[in-house]
Image (tube, rainbow, N blue to C red):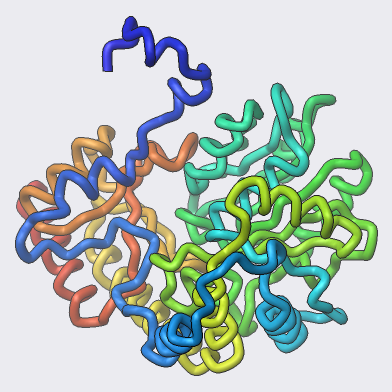
Length: 394
């Protein structure tokens, strides 16, 4: 659009300058390609299980189509408390949990709670771009701290992270396991970050959406939930999208100390006036009855990770490190610095869809991301196509 346009110029600068998504660019380019294997989006290939959909259908049939609790229906908030009590240490009550219209909205609520015009939030990168974009739309300033890729894979220098804090810093955004790198903080690293945040009196926004997708020695990735104390400044954000294959439902939650409940309720109310009751009924069923499905998804992702590792390791032109968590693989093909062009080229010439690393901020510009949370046979075919293409250009 021509920026001299009167209407365009009259918009807020943050809205005018909001970045186009490098993820969406490739998806739009290849969406209609026949036979293309899409490894670009942050979701698997499984639809939401029928037992979850049935709960929504029953709710609709029962006439649950009216306004409902702004904080979330009591049954879902209690189900979330029970879920956390099963998987994390501590004594969680329903008063910690507030239902949002997606994990993205949970992030927006967290930002709106603590950061405004000119406030800074520290963001280790590469990172999911929606966080920094949401912060900028709210008038805040993301301060990126790039991770380094080396012989040990992706590493975050905590001293660099801490040195980035200024008197304008309101929070550290921490996504572990991370999208897109799969980097996962150790418990010692989490303790160091929390100790630093306590000392400085700044918030932590902890995005633990991939906590269950962990390939280490324990069942779950290390979590701030293991070390948080009652008065810590931490907001936890999460979503139903990944564990229960509910990306299209747009439902998530934010977790915090109950004393902040009124604020969370107000912000949710003024953004969306709550989440549809029938969606929340489905979410209750997901957390109460969906554990077998979650474990099945994790097993599929683990197999996909191994398929990717075996394939990529066959070419000396490819740099990568198997991720410790999440379900993404960053990889670099030697000789291709323009990853946007490479992503489009792979659509045209290999019929696979991957995402350019520049979409995830400083540190990943020369990498591409693929999602391996898919059927094993599809992953094998996708990697065959990729490796055949790499062999042709070698």
